[in-house]
Length: 119
Image (tube, rainbow, N blue to C red; front, side, top):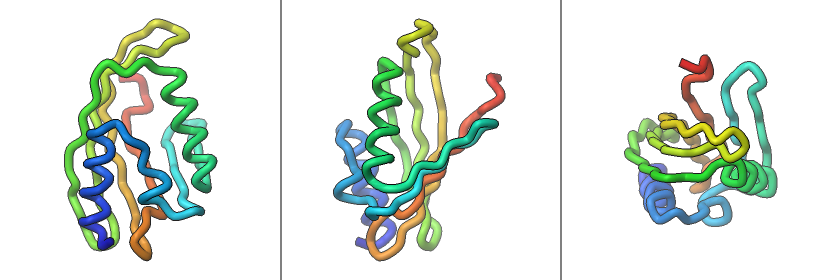
């Protein structure tokens, strides 16, 4: 798949609530989260574990995915998520952007951007 085909496939899977790791990601893909503690996970198993942890910590009320916006071997998706953090009971609306890098027809890197200041 080229970058745009891969991006469109990811959007479709996200909108269906389906996991994309096995189908669209390279075995050694990297996921990067921002913030003071930051986080970098490498490999399909680690990315699946991160996803399972996140969904275990949050109840999702609404989710939307828009894009893609391609540029060369990268593309951006926009996510809007309405969630409740299970432990605190705090409900929040989140907006984040995901920047994806593609090589050899697979996603090799995803980087997320969102407000980490609490504003």
